[in-house]
Amino acid sequence: MGLQAFEKTRAAGALLLVVAAALPAQRSVAQDSSGSVVSAARLEAIWSDVEEEVRLRRHDKDALQLLRDYGLNKDIDKPRRGPNGSIVFPFGATQVRIICAPLRVCDLALEPGEILTGMHIGDRGRWGILPADVGKGPKATTHVVIKPHAMNLETNLVIHTDRRVYQLELVSRKKDHMPLVSFSYPEDAVAAWEAYLSGRREESAEVAMDLGRASIEDVNTDYEITGDEPPWRPRAVYDNGERTCIKMPPGLRRTEAPVLLLEERKQMQLVNYRVRDGCYVVDRLIEKAVMINGVGKHQQRVEIQKKHEKKKRRRRR
Image (cartoon, rainbow, N blue to C red; front, side, top):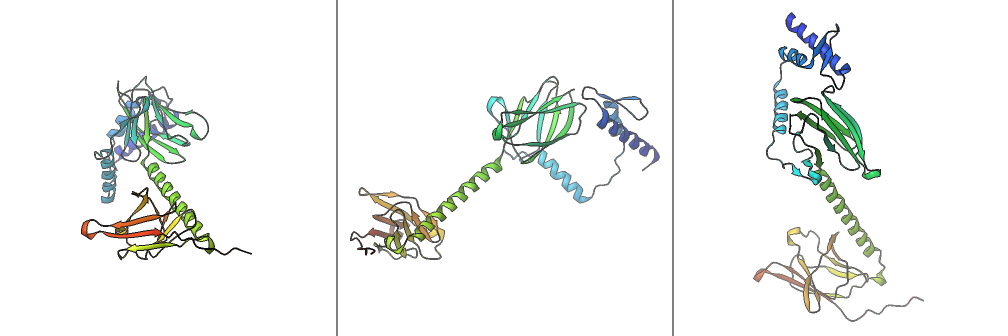
């Protein structure tokens, strides 16, 4: 680096440190180390005049290109209109840019219950950033109030919470601005489905355990299996007085799973069942059922009929 470029870099660096540490929120000027007043515009001009001599590697360029693609991604879900005229961005889909205007306030609402842990803005001197809370308790919503002190400004804002990190771009224009901004969280929907499926698995396990805990005297095995002999033909059927278990053969592929129909008032109705350890668990008792797979001449049909002869049980002495 030449002497002249070195002096420019050192001067600009000194001014930048002064601005970051001492520039008041309502001023657009700062003082250098000698006490002279320097405008923010002059500071930017000095930085732009410094020659860039740091060479980028191939991996560095690839990383920067990924960031540009992320910021210009056109294939993502577009922002949508939310309640109270808010703009709702899908979190994590692309680089979010919030457009503000002087003498106007932009209100960024975080997820209800989300706790703010830190905020960092690139241009603290010409942007005002304040937190605010709406509501109390676990459903309280944190808002970040954003206000530029001039137009034609650009900077970035990083918000840290107990759930995620927001990487935002801030832009100020003369008139255009977004009064209220919020986010949708696709990962929350995924987590909700995972919790739902986990609950169903636990419920199925409890049902299977209930059937397994039933004593031999309480289990009814008086069922008759008739019809075709497909690979999926049940091996046994039994109930514990509340639920019915249809024991299927081992190695049954999901594509072979038959449809289960129950006869009610001389009409066949589709019934839901749960699969647990090779057992189709039905949350009711069965009088007559039909299991069907395929259509037309390739259809396979197995009937399950409860025997009406009641099994005599020995009384305990």
